[in-house]
Image: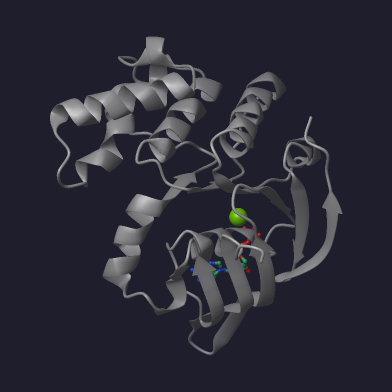
Length: 234
Ligand SMILES: Nc1ncnc2c1ncn2[C@@H]1O[C@H](COP(=O)(O)OP(=O)(O)O)[C@@H](O)[C@H]1O
Ligand SMILES: [Mg+2]
């Protein structure tokens, strides 16, 4: 018996309506992602990549279709339960990091834990230190975002996504604003998180080299998967 996929989409559809105009960024998409896979999503602008990430991560909800992530039927969760699910089960990494400029690296990483009940200050400190250590930035804990390079800012953002130890990470063009060397560091980190720490990762990218870091590449066009290729992780 094989275990069920970590992410299962069947006929996944998202329709936005504005007055009489209807946009269908995701059109009856079928997708299985096994636990621990590092998946890259490519496709032209407007093909539905961010829409798909937002559904998988519980930020948005499908118009129709089946969506099960980590055993949870996201299509049927209430907004409140979806928000709680997301806080515990999914870390989101953005192209432009979205760090709070007046907070230190430590405080930025600590933010998601402040929403959690039952953690002491010592628990939080311990977890933040471990997350910063995992991204190799223990020595930058007191720095503010403006005192860090872009690559370091993205590593802080990854530490923030990891600090609650979610099984799922989604990343929307995480290397889109970085030079090649910093991008390669981020990609190596994501690879390790999937191969050694069992995180399931779905990453959107326009960069073919970034996509090749993943274990599998899928292409979206007009809200549907169009082809797939197998990449060999470096
Ligand atoms: N909240 C929204 N309301 C209306 N249309 C949207 C919304 N979000 C995305 N869209 C539309 O859905 C399509 C796909 O968008 P998106 O998923 O962001 O594409 P990608 O990330 O591949 O560039 C686009 O045509 C976009 O304008
Ligand atoms: Mg997008």
